[in-house]
Length: 105
Image 1 (cartoon, rainbow, N blue to C red):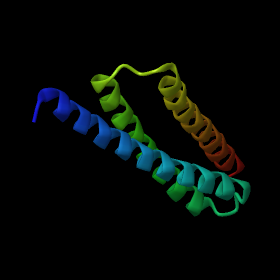
Image 2: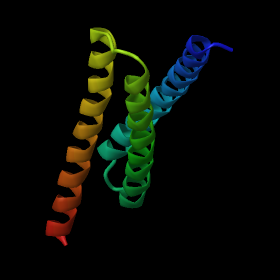
Image 3: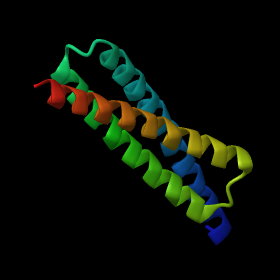
Image 4: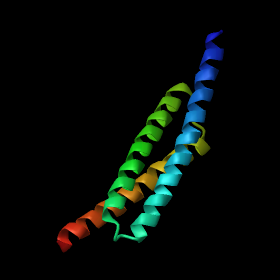
C-alpha cells in the first residue's frame, strides 16, 4: 500500500470516528439541556455533564488528529468550532447552576 493510500485510509477512519463522536456529543448535549430544564434532578445533571465532557474531549482529540492529516476547509473549521462553542455554552450553564446551588445551601 502506498503512503498516499495509507494516508487516505487513516483520514477516512478519523472522519468516520469524528462523525460518530459528533452524533454522540449531540445526543449528550441535548440530554443535558433536557435535564437542565428539570433542575430538581441534581445528580442527573452531574452525571450527564460528565458524559458531555468525556465525549467532547474525545471529539476534540479526533478533530486535532484530522487537522494534522489534512488542511481544514472553511466549512470543516466552522463545524469544528461550532461544537467547541456548544461545549462552552454547556460548561457555562453547568457552572452557573452549580454556583447557584452552592449559594442556596
